[in-house]
Amino acid sequence: MEDLPRRKENKKLYNASTKTLQIDPQVRRPVENVSSKIQGSLKGKEASENRETRKNRQNRQEWGKFEGVYYKDLQTDSKVQKDFMLEMAKLLNTYMADQCQGKVKVVDFHHPHQLQDMMGDCLTVDAVPRDLHQVLSDCKETLKYCVKTGHPHFLNQLSTGLDPVGVAGEWLTAAVNTNMFTFEVGSVFVLMEDIILRKMRSFIGWKEDGDGIFTPGGTISNIYALMLARHRKFPNIKEEGMYGGQKMVVYTSAQSHFSIKKAAIILGIGMNNVCCIPCDERGKMKVDVLEREIQRTLSDGGVPLMVNATCGTTVLAAYDPVDKIADICQKNGIWLHVDGAWGGSALLSKKYKYLLQGVERCDSMTWNPHKMMGVPLQCSAILVRNSGELQSANALCADYLYQTDKFYDVTYDTGDRSIQCGRHNDVFKLWLMWRSKGDNGFEDSINKIFHLSRYLEEKVKQREHFTLVTNEVEGPSVSFWYEPPQLIGQNLSPTERRNILSKVAPKIKESMTLKGNMMLAYQPLGDLPNFFRIAISNPRLSESSLDWVLDEIERLSKDIFC
Ligand code: ABU
Image 1 (cartoon, rainbow, N blue to C red):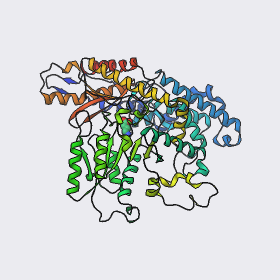
Image 2: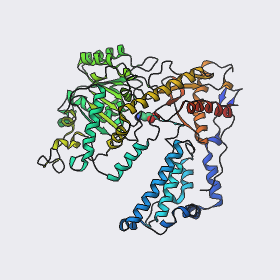
Image 3: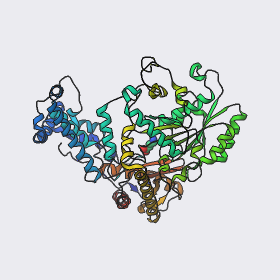
Image 4: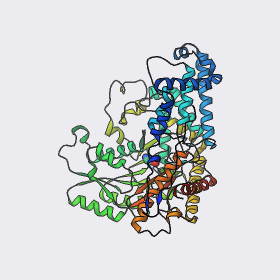
């Protein structure tokens, strides 16, 4: 891949006389410039073919033996298959090692159609097969543009890091390529799922048999919870639908995840019947308001269906007071769901499990090991206190799949409790990591993640021009504003200051992404203007890498706002 001309990245954006931040049109639209340069020198298909030839030349020495060797040869020659897979393993191993050691950039960002131009023929799929040399080159080229989510400076999401055992588990899962719906094909993985779900339930504090299933992410887990709540209250909806029923109301904090509203939409409850309870300054649900809203629903003739208590909100990582919410749910006979997608893993730590105090009183809990436990995406579980509820809500007993006259114990055919038919095996990588780390290893990781977040919180407190959004950080996410000194001391009204502040984080984010050396998240929250969020889920991070991130924010800001 030739080095393309880089765009001019930063311009002075603050206009002191008008007290505004300018959006530089050159920075906003770099793509056309770069792409027209490419197209000016090399035209269309010819250009793309030339690029492919160049790339092939570079890779020829490495993978020369695969030239003229095709997919069909993989199927007939076991040596070809073995050599091909070994080359892939080498490629992926280098990819993982380089990013985890911070040897490469976090991202080599290009706008969509720029990337399309650059990758050229690597992206098209047509009638003629490519040889395996090309296939390996395609993989290498693809990896070049992937965001390096295992890099110590990738802090953009709640899921970060790259666990080698977890990745090995995912490889094995892909190689086995089985389905989880029945024991006859899911086999040992069905047993592992049972063991891991039991283990997770035991960390919640449930002693009895319960229920659970791995799902394609926290949103789906939350949808399951609402479906179960509805099924318990109105079991006939499964057959009859919801025509003419009573209005059902779901309660969740204003800072909870949007998936609660999605669940209400999907299940026909309606997003306007999701009552968003305001939060205190730390982002925790105000329980007195919850109680009032439930009474209001009852006096209006509605049915309070479910309360969702978030343990680890998406932005501030706040934990709702589960115990107090459980009191209210118990008094009013309401299903209590805990969305612990982000913060549920604190249960693995004796030091931090207090954050979920009362969790054993909930009816269901979402817990995403692909976040704080560092399991490769995707790995999310819905855990249910009472056994049989998933089966009762979902079972259709398809007799081509879940025959009751099979020769083995069909209670191990777990698929009918799912809303899916075919289901990916998400448990093996988690099981393998749990085998290799043990409870103690996971506890150490969680403690380290929390320690790092406390360290970062302290550093943000100490640094000039950095301000924490909340002074009492609970989960391992640290949210803060950075106010460039160039903007401070200006004679700004609060509104002007707020308007400028709201543009600072997006501008610094743009700059870091184009430079490619780190990625952080930013967002507004209610009335609060944009701020950075650093969520820590990679236990391989160090204090010095976090210091570097704060330094880099200052450096980038200097370039932009000087
Ligand atoms: N499901 C919430 C994910 C949000 C994030 O990774 O930033």
